[in-house]
Amino acid sequence: MSKLWNNFTTWLTHTKLWIWWNPQNLTQTTPSFYWDYMKVYAVIVCIFFVGAIVSIFWPKFKPVRDRLALYFWTNAVLSLILFFFRYQDIPVLGMDIFRLIQEITAVIWLFLIIRFAIKAYPAHQLSLKVEERRNKYLPKAKAS
Image 1 (cartoon, one colour):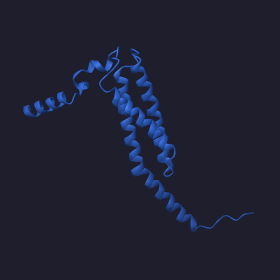
Image 2 (spheres, helix red, strand yellow):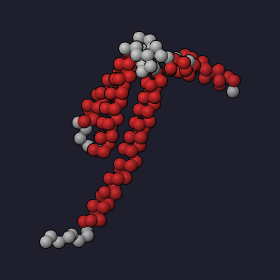
Image 3 (cartoon, helix red, strand yellow):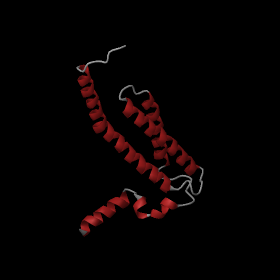
Image 4 (cartoon, one colour):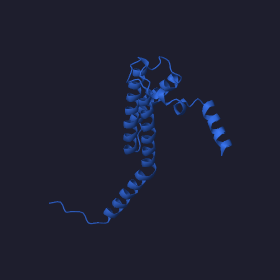
């Protein structure tokens, strides 16, 4: 067990996962002007905006498209606001804890959308087809 723990800690220190070893960085009230992952976070913000624009023009699967559009627009705006706070060195609003919370909720939200697209939406479509087929053989109401 000790060897496994040593290998794990060595891996964590070499991959620069500083969150696990310096939790005080998450609540730093004076963020640095240039942090290590600034360019990566800027790319993530751009990906959210591109996803938001693409999700508008996605023609099929309207319920999934609407959920994805809401997901991308919300996360794009929130990411841009948090990036702005960090870039402008705003003391409390630029803390990494807000960015971490936003990233965790974005991953959970995307997981729920994917689960909806894989499980719930096809089941709903199937029930609509069954209902349509059943109604095909039922008598129609007479028009007066």
